[in-house]
Image (cartoon, rainbow, N blue to C red; front, top):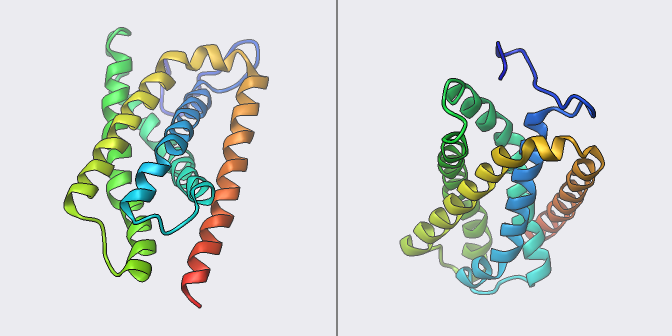
Length: 189
């Protein structure tokens, strides 16, 4: 447990920060979830893109959340659960992760989908689709953040595995960014 907000818990043998390991686990789980659900999201917007580039774009959105907003969420929940019993911490992490990623899905993912669908089909997501996306993102946020809290110390002890997962996430996100730029630049022509 950190004694102050400036203290960083690290694995004793590898020196990998525990919060980084948590975020890597969250990113890996959200990446798998994004790839698994990309077809579901694509059908919501009328199959306006190919599945593989779209899956990469959805992965980019997930990884962007993980490493932009995710660290702040983890820091907040760490502060929130500082005096909580250890057996309740994974659930508390999961609830905060569900709220954070659900809000991200509500605002960011639906905006990305509407930005692509409206120019091509002239329609935007229905309210039911927005609710489905938000709930889907909240469920994945709960699972990913709970897994991150529960298994971070194990991953921090395996620095090569952690670095491999991090590199894979960043590579998929970079490909997703390229695909997103290509898709949205084609809309501007």
